[in-house]
Length: 499
Image (cartoon, rainbow, N blue to C red; front, side):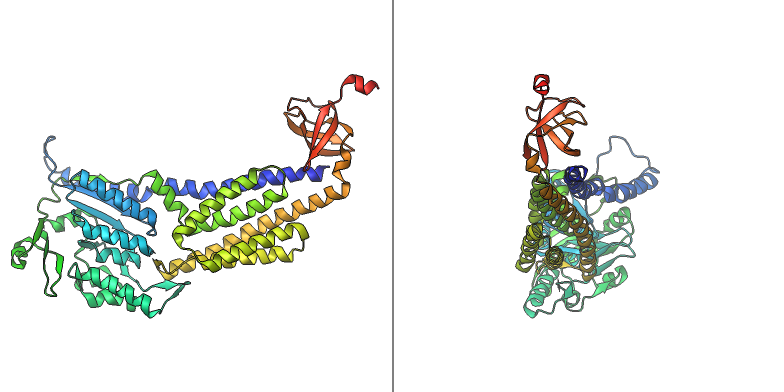
C-alpha cells in the first residue's frame, strides 16, 4: 500500500533531519572557531608591523628581542576554555614567552572554570595581560573575575567590564551566602594585584559596569589601547613588580620602571624592548577543544537532548535501527554537555516525564499525552540553565531561554507530526492485517537490491529479497514473511507458475 510505504520515508527523513541538526551546529562551530583570531589579531598585528617596522631598516638576521603569545577567549567560559588556557600556558613556557596577552570578550561562564583559570593566572611565571578588545567587547561577570586575577589589565575604547552579580534561574540572586562568597573571591584577587577592593566589591553587590576611562581612573585597568602595538608601546617604560602593599599583602603592580625601586620589590619584570620587533605566536585552539566547546554550548546541549529523545521515540515506531542509534548518540552527547552546564534534578525529572508521556502516546494516540510531553520538555529545558555554578549575565541567560523555547516548539511540532503520521499509517496497516499477505504472489515494481518495492494485493509495499540477491523489476514473487511493514519475498519459479 502506498501510504504504508511512506513509513520508510518517515524513518529516512527522521535520520536525515537528526544528522542535519547535529552536524550543522558542530560544523559551523568548528569552521568559525578561529575566525576572530584571523580577522582581528592577525590583521591588526600585520597592520602595525608593516606600517611601523616596515618603515625601518631591519637586518634579516636581527634576533627577536621579546616573545609574546596571543590567546583569544571570545566565548562563554567553560571547561573547554579552561583546558585551552592550560594548554596555551604550557606552550608559552616551552617557547620562553615574556608576555601572554589574552584577548577577552565574554558574557561570563562556568564558576569552576573561571576559578581554575584565575588560579592558573595567579601561579603563572609569565606575566598575564588580559586585554578587553576589540571595540564592543565585554568582560562581564566571569570575565571581570579573570581581569582581577591578571598581572596587567588593558581595555580598548568602547568596551565594558563589570556586571558580576550572580544570576540564578535567569534572575539576579540575593542569596546572602552565595553573594558573600563571590564578593570574597573578587576582593581576594583584587588585593593580590593592589586594586581597589571597594570597587571590586561593587562589581558584585551593585552589578557595576565600567568604561575604559572609568576603569583606568579607578585603578582597575592599567592601560587603554586600541590596538596591540599601542599596548606594547605603553608597556615599554613600565615594570611589573611584586612587593609588600600597604595592606600587608604581597601584591603585583604595574609601575613606571623609574619608580620601581621605591617599592622595594621582591620580583621585578621590566618590559623595555617589548615592542621592538617581538616574535608573536598566535595560539590556535586544538580541534578537540573546539569540539568540547560546542558540546557544552547551552543551545547545542538542548538540541542534542530534545532531538535525541524524539529520535528514539520515532525509532520505536518505525522499522530499522537508524533513528534509535542516532538518537542514543545524541542523548549521550547532550548528557555530556549537561554534566558541564550543571545538573538540575527538577529538569531531569521533566525530561524523563516527557519521554514517558510520548511513549504512552505511541500506544494511546490521545494527543493530550503528546502535548503534555512537549510541555515537559520545554519546562525541563528552561530549568537546566543556568545553575548556581555559572557566572553569566542576565541578558545572555534570557536570550538562551528564548531560543530554547522557540527551538523546542519547532522540533516538538515536527516530530509530533511524524509520530502522528506513523501512528496513522500503522493503524491502517493493522486494519489490513498485513500478516495475511504471507503466501500471496505479486510482482516487483522496482529492482530489489535487495530492497525495493513490490505490488501485492493491488497495493505497493516496501519489500526485501529473502536471500539478499537481486530480483529484477517485473519479476513474479511470493511473500515469505513480514518484518514490520516490509515484505520478505522470493522469486516464483516458472515451474511453480505452471502448476
